[in-house]
Amino acid sequence: MNATEPASLRKQLIKWYLKHRRDLPWRRSDDSYHIWVSEVMLQQTQVNTVLKYYHRFLKTFPNIKKLARADLQDVLKVWEGMGYYARARNLHRAASVVANDYGGRIPNSWEDLRSLPGIGDYTAAAVLSIAFNQPYPVVDGNVKRVLARLHKIGAPVNQARSYPVFKDAAGKLLDPKQPGIFNQAMMELGALICKPKNPVCDACPLDHLCLAFKTRQVAKFPKRQKSRATPQYHITVGVIFKDDRVLITRRKAEGLLGGLWEFPGGKIKQGESAEAACIREIKEEVNLKVRIDSHLTRVKHAYTHFRIIMEVFCCRYVSGKVKLHGPTAHRWIRIEEYKNYPFPKANHKFIPLLEQKQGFD
Image 1: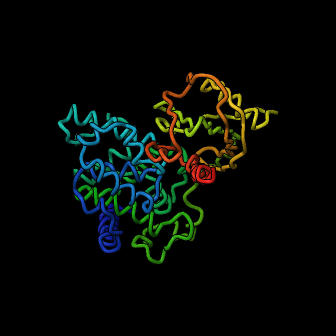
Image 2: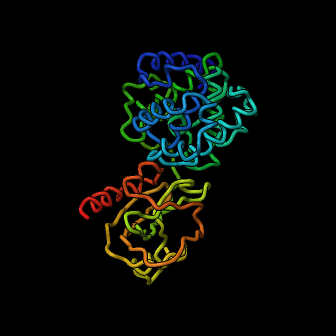
Image 3: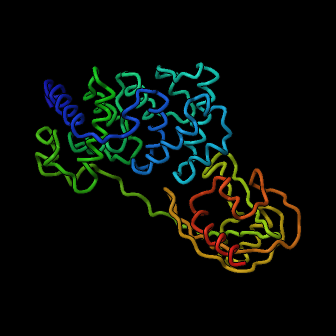
């Protein structure tokens, strides 16, 4: 690409974007808080899923100070079902820092913004360029795919060591006068036209500049390093009934599903039956002796880097006093009260069966 082409590319791409972009609510706002929330949500989550959560989140927490004062459990409840809960925890922590240290205003410098919990290079570049019109290139999956095909970049897009290659390429193309619009145009091109499979090259405003298209190698880019096989774990969960209530426990604040509530359980050991594992895990985790009444269901669920098969049992409290080893809190609740607590998606797959069971009983 010669020296005159970046200017032509910017002009054509922005013209295409302004004509074909999707009408998304965060694009109608210049509020840096709204933009920040949308960018955090859009990490690892599809636009159609984010839409309903975005509206609900801003209705509940309309500004940074409201979010900073909120209880984390309320934040997780609004986030419930969208996954990657570290995003919600970090958003809450960062809001507290902004409220206390920056007067409730999102900082507009790279160093200050990047120092906030949960804000990496992508989020910082997106917020600074879109909300503050500062020239920082955004590099996400869509942008890397566009760049890989445009320049025939051989670096694997799924390797961290490739990031500087794509950041450098994105920086050279970035429109310094309209960085926010240009970044959104690049991401939109990747989402609507330069798709992972079946890209719509005939509708691409950059096809005449795309090396992969001109050499008929679009299908060969982007390059990816082969991933390892996804591990699968067999686990057991016990819904412990004591009179008309069941026991739920809260996970530690950090780590996978941090801060969410769940029913006690854990991994099944090799050679161990699911029933025996359920009784053992409950004893180890909450110090209760139980008996198993019935097998409620089997749940299959996929996380980013592993899958689980969950055996769910209905148990009856026999003896003991709750003493936690791992969880941070516990509650004895009626089944219908689960709506007041944030639960992992895997639990939501069997909770309706508990409601049916309660109605039948």
